Length: 299
Image (cartoon, rainbow, N blue to C red; front, side):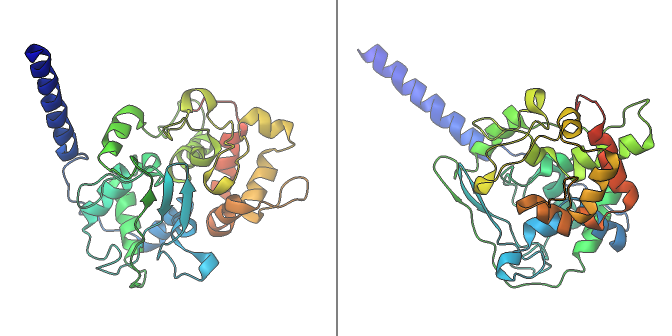
């Protein structure tokens, strides 16, 4: 009996030590300075392409631009987009450019805590230092708003952020933005936007019980369980073609929100167009449409 007791005690100690180790285990790369000068206009354009305005502005309640407060109801609890204005206490005004870079590309806060993957940082991981500098320059022009970010209301055990370290180890995948030889500049620009900044797969790909995208089997095949009860249709090339889309009509819809049958986008996709893709150049909208309408495996 004593032997079993000692074994049980030893197992408990090992488990406790392992848990403590997991909690204190650091994530993210060491902060690296970015000395490049940023371009405000390029940064503002990238912010639009990346959906920053739509996600971090509570238009329904007349919120200030990028002041956060947009609720995202998930099966794991409720998340609220944070304040991204230049307020030093409630926004990102007290951050360094290096901390901003790590947050955007790695999903790690200045305090070293993991962000919930509702923040689409996995799609931004390939942003260059120049793109980060441009974004940073653009965000520095946002007036400060003294509105505290609302803390997430996550259910147990998802309110234990150390658990996100396990999630990252199991499910974090790199963005698929690298150019593909033989596909041409327009197609590859579309790939860069669709699989990166515009993070289309965040909504249009189903997720498993842990909230990770089923990229290997259901890339762009739609999602029937979006936060807030919305659904995202399939946008693979076969489905789009079967529903009457082509490159021209898709590019047009990304500018106007009007579909080939005369209907309009609603819900979150309407916001994507209104606050995001309608601000893109015609060339970039055509690139997105070209990529989506072509047969590819997403890899």
